[in-house]
Structure formats: structure tokens, C-alpha cells
Image (cartoon, rainbow, N blue to C red):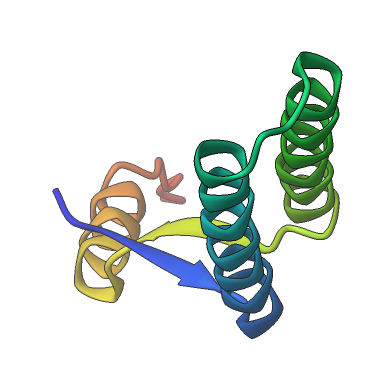
Length: 89
């Protein structure tokens, strides 16, 4: 059984921005002499960014999964063949 994922363009942009910002945040955490509080603030902002992205994607159906058109057609014919038709004499 094959599924297709439909992804809106803004979801890809959100994901790309998240990857870039996450990379910058990790580089700053590892290379700069930040305090524990500053490290935690950076990580909390990152977690909030990804959580907000997940909620927005879910709310606006940014990613949907669908069956392949061929399988959907097969299911329709199976359902149609199982219908009961009355016969009038």
C-alpha cells in the first residue's frame, strides 16, 4: 500500500529556517562561553519554534497523507460491487 504526502511550500520554508537557526544555536552553544541560563534560553526558544511549527502545520493541514489514486480507484470499485440492488419482478 502506497501513501503520498502532500506538503505545502510554507512548511518546507519553516523546516528550512528551523534547521538553519538550530545549527546557528548549536554552534553558539558549543563555541561561545555562555552561562547555563543562556544555554537553556536558546534551547527553550528552539523547542518553542518547533512546537509552534507543529501546531500550525496541524491546524492548517500543512502535511496530508493520501492513498495513491490507483488504490483509491480500486477501493471504489470494491465498494460499488458490494452494494445491494433490489430486483423488481
